[in-house]
Image (cartoon, rainbow, N blue to C red; front, side):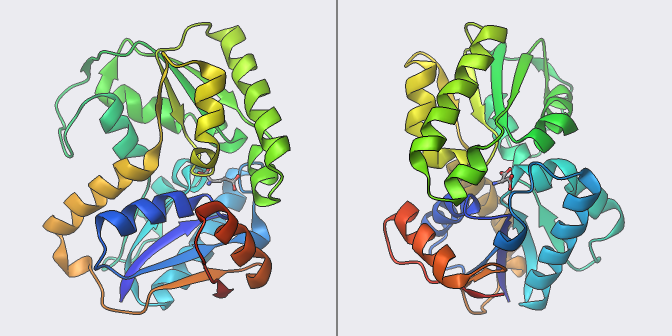
Length: 269
Ligand code: DGL
């Protein structure tokens, strides 16, 4: 048994790295569905089917708890999976809620009615499927009132990152920030609502300006997972850590090593 971390590709490694630092004794199995990435341009049904298949692979690897380190899967598939697919003895958690809790300054499990919060103008950068789902706005409405969210679907950024074309990724980030600013000239906070985007965090911050607080999920998810495991220690496994991909392990290992600046070796899933 180990804890599973799933993403369509390399983006979830930003979450994986943070949770490994926070929980160094816990074995993690990472699965990148590289053969089917990007998910952000697919339909909700397609994302649901692919995510169930990937999570089943992690259950088969002995994981009782799987973190969807992918906003697109969290937004388009998680609720349906929890309602009708996840077996009783397993858990699947997403990455949206910890970020919204941080933005709304709430503690884990605070179910009090929605209230006014410090930030009122929030820019959301995410994949087309995440933006179309409106899952972020729905979760936010449970916790906060009076927050104006302007969402920008960042087409092309995930493909450029997966291809290792950081010049294109940089140009796309800047054009998406410009497009967002035409709709909301002065956001107070920006949410990087795709786990690939922390790999471009400096570019987002630079394009947005120093006075915009940029929230990314990695550390927030690390804290939430540590808190969850304190309350559910039976979900920590003792199995073998691994990096699995449905794509070409050599190519995926090269990209991952380039991004994280340490050797990462993927095996075929
Ligand atoms: N990292 C995924 C997310 O957080 C990527 C999406 C994709 O494959 O398009 O949304």
